[in-house]
Length: 358
Image (cartoon, rainbow, N blue to C red):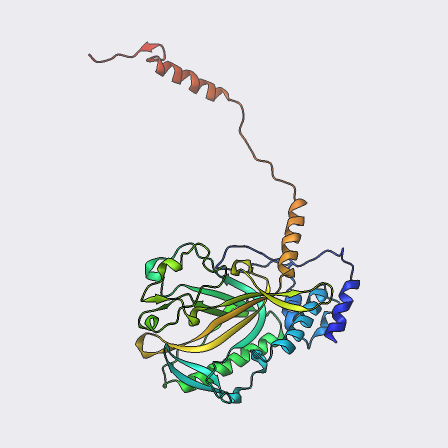
């Protein structure tokens, strides 16, 4: 079982060098950069249970098995709150039109009270643009948003999720007026599919007057940049709220818990779980755009990012520093220039006094 295999991790040689290497840049809004040392197979198998035997001879086996067990347990724990994308039954869903804000959304047919569908998906962060934000231009207030992108490399589970999103897209398109839905597109990262999720920080315009005010999540607005932008036409409501959390595993009894975390702690390369909704919003020209709205982000494991930082620091410590080049001393030509300058200062060039006009 995955849990039993996870226990075998402790017998691995902890001194074995790590070959995982990626860029853990802290600059938000930049994509993940990887070189030939990055363990794409190991990262791709983070969330795949069906290809475990293929990893037995691979350097990333330890990390892959560890996260497989985490996701398996999380499925058992969290299934009641938000189903995993790859396991959702489309027949249990219905699409309904919502007037405030105007949109088309997924709901569960069996629920006595309307409840929007929230789904979960796991992956590796390839793009991060999260708070805090230092400045917002006034004309960008309605559009400024938190955004992330996840990739799955060669993970079959992730590929299944991509297929499921295409099915949901078709389902949602069929419920909107004919020929009004803009084509659904994925981003590309290193020739692999990247799924983007975003959530605007504000509800603007006429919808703001009917918007219930919601406090900013911890770490989202530490300097009060967003708070100063709030007014009757700009509000931070339920549609703009994102929960940021971190999975914590007790070292002794291996129990799992979740704690609120700062959105600035997420790095490209981290293994995460995303909670999201698929919504069709109106755009110009009477069209609709399908959006994957970010509802929650959970940090599952950051060992790949930490190993990368350690590997990079170790590699840098063995690099021979390049000496700086300097030009020292004076040449004969330089000396002649100095003598000429001194003569000019004395109004005497080549021994001839310079005349001055009266």
